[in-house]
Amino acid sequence: MVVGDFAIELDTVVVGSGPGGYVAAIRAAQLGQKVAIIERDYIGGTCLNVGCIPSKALINAGHVYHNAKHGDFFGVNTKDITVDFARTQQWKDEEVVGKLTGGVEMLLKKNKVEIIEGEAFFVNDNTLRVIKEDAAQTYSFKNAIIATGSRPIEIPGFAFNDRVLDSTGILALTDIPKDLVVIGGGYIGSELAGAFANFGTKITILEGSPQIIPNFEKDMVRLVENEFKEKDVEIITNAMAKEASVDGDRVTVTYEVGGKTHTVEADYCLVTVGRRPNTDEMGLELAGVRVGDRGLIAVDDQCRTSVKNIYAIGDAVEGPALAHKASYEAKVAAAAISGDESTVVDYVAIPAVCFTDPELASVGHTQESAKEAGLDVKATKFPFAGNGRALSLNHTDGFVRLITTKEGNVIVGAQVAGPNASDVIAELTLAVESGMNAEDIALTIHSHPSLAESVMDTAEAALGMPIHM
Ligand code: FAD
Image (cartoon, rainbow, N blue to C red; front, side, top):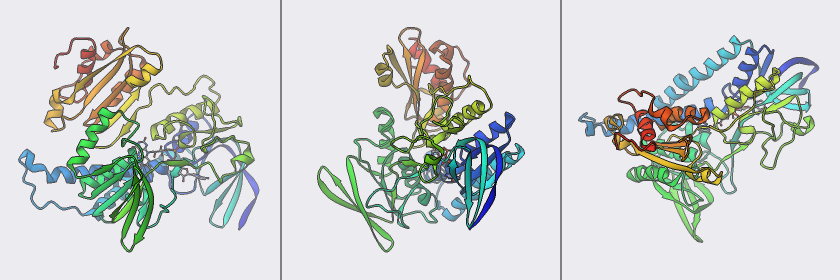
């Protein structure tokens, strides 16, 4: 191994180039700092390479296929529809992921961020070593931002191999599986199950808790369960996955429900039971950075760790493991390093979206969490069945729900289950973030016909004067 015998001096160094790291690097550069970013794998991190973006590309391709097959509903003749999955994957990899990661690399360069390839290890609180293959170089830094993200959790009995896959493995398949067992029906498992169900794969979901997608409310999840049922997806809840055994090109999964043992066989088993922060094995203890029980780095409201010149953001710290939360924290950390003491994180409105059929989205309080927080609220629901745009899309399942204070009608939370909920939630996120009330929404002119009109209709209903209900 060649070890650089002198330390190259850096001003601000960012470790990891996901939606946390690359945004932090660009913002810090915009604020006048000399920035370097260190990445051991691919620019763009989990999100752009093996997470949000490729999964949504496959989900969309699955929709195109499924809708084409069912086009006769609209009077479109859809005989002999087939999928060229190799082309689907090529499109995903080259024209979606490739373009986006190339774009991020260009943005980093445009902002004069130095890209350093290799794996970073802290030596102390102002030095780190970067190792790439058989070469190593030492760097000293004034400030560091840890944005090392997370990786899939492997569970006993389910060691990853070419039939027992994590989310990265399933996204890289070259053929559509005939059947697939999904261990863990959280949002990643349910999204990927939905994508492959749309391609015609027979899916079995084994979920340990009483409900899939446990982070969302029952009346929202029921819509997804109904859709899964229509596509012949079997959901087995309260199931404890025990073991996977591979025999040739088949895998048998053993699981228990209520003390009884069962098995299910498939082409592949996908394990999506959660993710673990990438905070081990990078020398954080040598830098004095305090790491909590679950490997998450403890930070203050400016994302500063227990060491004053080292910050941490994204999946490596507490809070929902979401790309937009990582990017938000990135901007706060970059501002803090640049001497801004007033910019602090405020998590009042972090939207969460599950890209199932239909999409589920939530921001701020649910009715239950609002009550637990001591707020006197009411919930108002408006169904997409009363929305012209939803009808023209043939997607009328679902609703918009507003959680408003009984006094003043302040919007403290909202849920959307239905077509394009991922976009409809944006207006409601702004409403919660800005402390708007139902009247603010009701008096805003919404374009017609649009799904967003349902937000206005819900606000009018909350005020006791619904037009379309
Ligand atoms: P990451 O994106 O994980 O990036 C961390 C980077 O750090 C990686 O590139 C890694 O190689 C690098 N790194 C780690 N250690 C070192 C080291 N020592 N030296 C150098 N480099 C290092 N979130 C959403 O908001 N919406 C979605 O729809 C969504 N869908 C998802 C679908 C899937 C299948 C998966 C797996 C995740 C999804 N997520 C989604 C979650 C999202 O991807 C993460 O929350 C997000 O990527 C976290 O960003 P980050 O910057 O903290 O870390």
